[in-house]
Image 1 (cartoon, rainbow, N blue to C red):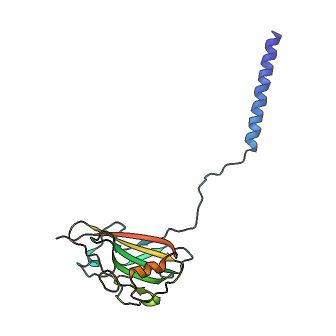
Image 2: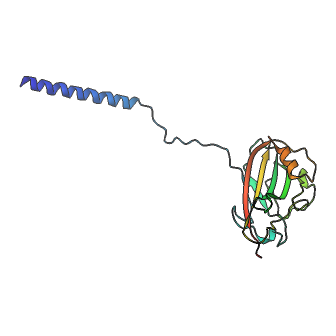
Image 3: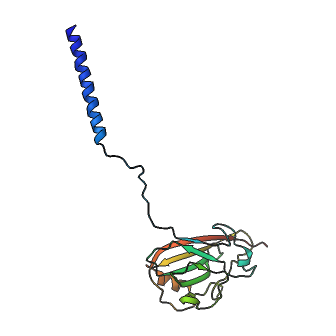
Length: 197
């Protein structure tokens, strides 16, 4: 009988001692943060247009069936090291391969938009220049696909760590070559357009 009570007392002592150790470990454990997410001040580089949504239809006004003027564009969030911007607009669905509709380069870093209807001039305000598109014209040439399925028109804005040493009326190839190894970030806006028979 005495041995029975001794076993119970020893077992109880072991349990109490173990509980005490666990409690002390809990008190000394460092508090875990409420969240493991980290925040950053880096903004996304975004290109958009008040005339159409990304992936949406380009209004006829900005095509060869309309006024054939450039749509309004605006952007934000380019890297702080940016020295200039380049905009290239292309149709990757053209029958003979990529068709370039607009090249505009040395856009000043202070700018955050292009107004509707940029004039087809070699040089614009603040040092901006325009290249020759695949229509063989200077400046913007609107969507003008053959009748049938819709084509995508990719507006791509490049943030560069330099100002391009190019004169006006440059070709797509000249601009791309000069941009090589100077691209900090890219922002893309895609519009859709199709022509009926």
